[in-house]
Length: 321
Image (cartoon, rainbow, N blue to C red; front, side, top):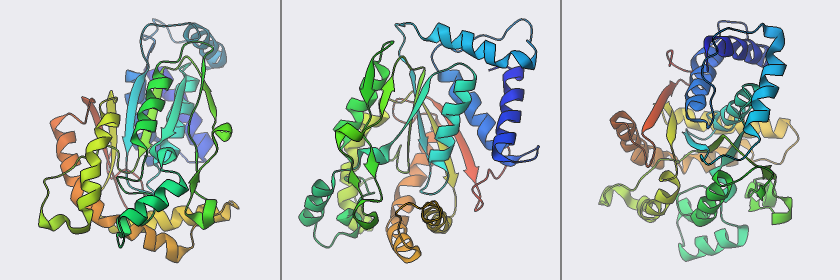
């Protein structure tokens, strides 16, 4: 991605978001993340010797798109995107896909939320752990179908031109906001080939810590984290949206549920949203500091390319990335 690309992406997203430039959201969050994602996307173009005029944006993207439509022996990159609930991960992942599309790259975003257990499986899990607030409802390590997620990532990275695969989809509004996996016939289809797969989730990158009495109720979810190595091993690069104050996460989630209600979707009430998210604060305190340390060391699972963006209570970068 060259300076010409960055300039038009900057203008595009500023107009799209209705934000005047300079913009912390565009300049310090979107562009650094897009630049990082583009570096690991398959088939990224080298910088051109000359810059075409802005009017040729569509034609240039179309030419790139036609080149990427054929079969390739190289697998698409897999980018992990981790950050607290309500921090804007899903929005950022969608903007990565949109931005890469403007550059002629084919990308798809997948959320670990879509790999939650079915409603019946979740109820069985809760029954097997009576009294566990952590495993009573979806969210914590142990409440995902890890094998389904791994199979989905492998299917997406193996897609050839014209091939299609269905990606699991989870309905968070089902059962008064408690959720259930949609029927397979309702899962969205993705057509290959792809240049990048973005996997996003609040606990992506978490690893089990040494068992101790301090873990308390987190003992079972901590043990379950070992299974998630199957996802982490498939990552080529990793982005962490880092929030220092766990209490800010409560506000993030309540605001997110309000937004869903305002859009006419089924969602949790403020009280239920706060009750739900407070169950996760011990998880952030237990597993985020070791994740920060691994990011500083330069390796998270299979990812050796790491980008950390600290966020404030307004969900915007604290300083330029």
